[in-house]
Image 1 (cartoon, rainbow, N blue to C red):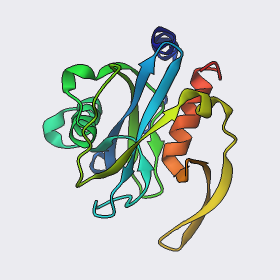
Image 2 (cartoon, rainbow, N blue to C red):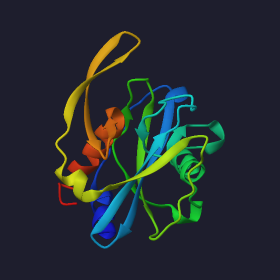
Image 3 (cartoon, rainbow, N blue to C red):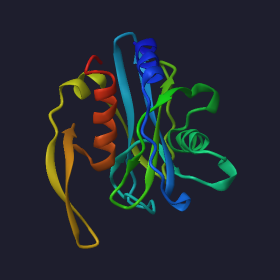
Image 4 (tube, rainbow, N blue to C red):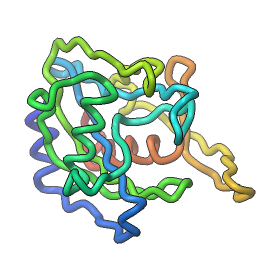
Length: 185
């Protein structure tokens, strides 16, 4: 299954969004599992982080000049947030850049993480890890919910998994990945 995902991403031409460098961010979409039983690793953010408090997200964060590019940012943040070793993050490809309601321009990289793996979430940033089955992603029918930021109301896609709301950019990234894989996950 990982080889199928790699093949799909190799032939896919992701959309690049040109945005202000100070708003660049990179995330990893970690895929973990064996055979056809794969999971996407998400994080539930703590209430103490600066941005996106208590939200479900991918491991990742703001670009720093020392990183050089957003892939380095994404991998560095993934290692910091969920306690994986850099050597264990195998980038399979990337998908379209996405804007967030908070103005970040996120570049998502899909990566394989070995199975089994003992994740060590950073308690300052991650309340807990969510393992979203690919099967759930394949079958989910997201709804639209209203979200407000600075008086601006927008309808955003969302769905729930085991009581956690997956919405906004995280939901859009998951749906884009599903579309790229042609719903065959």
